[in-house]
Image (cartoon, rainbow, N blue to C red; front, side, top):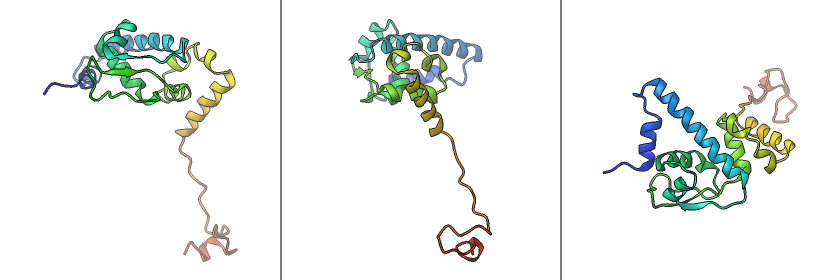
Length: 168
């Protein structure tokens, strides 16, 4: 059975046996390509980009494999996810993204080269960008609730100390 395009992409991109320098060079090159595609997408944020995988690769002047990687990265931010697990060159895919979700996912991925793109300032105000950034950061912050002390009033509302009520 032949491997899917996504499996082939992951074999290259996440190859644990590859030389570390080669892998860094690969990702450095990929991140630059990714940035260029996002610059184009964000320049016309309301355009509904659709086409076969091969057509989109040609539109953005990329290889099919690079486009597979790009689709893998943006899929969680799309209004209608693509069938990336099973797609081939002739599968019709889309790049119709939820703007706020895309921005927050870029922040979540710590991809500052993407969420700091100047095109975002044409889509959202400075205040909106700060609010989306803060919302994403807070969504991943783990907060511990204040622990109830033995001598604190019981949270059940009985009026007794916790140690004499629910803390027994």
